[in-house]
Image (cartoon, rainbow, N blue to C red):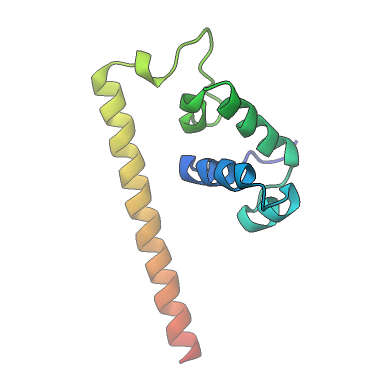
Length: 108
């Protein structure tokens, strides 16, 4: 079995936006975002059509069942999740800047 891939909510929203515009094919979207299977796009579009936007933010392996979404979490848990998200984003941003700096040093 393959390794599960995580796509941030922003990527999922952008994929939905591009798909709804009608100017992008599944193949083009898959190449742009590194999505391995077109059924992933179909799943996100189904969630969008069913107005299940909260599912786009769910982490891998934690599906909200029985109609319960992130709104059912306590305020403290919601804030913890937001803090974890922003910490991860800052960490990735720092890593990206470090890689970019090394790349420029290598080629300049």
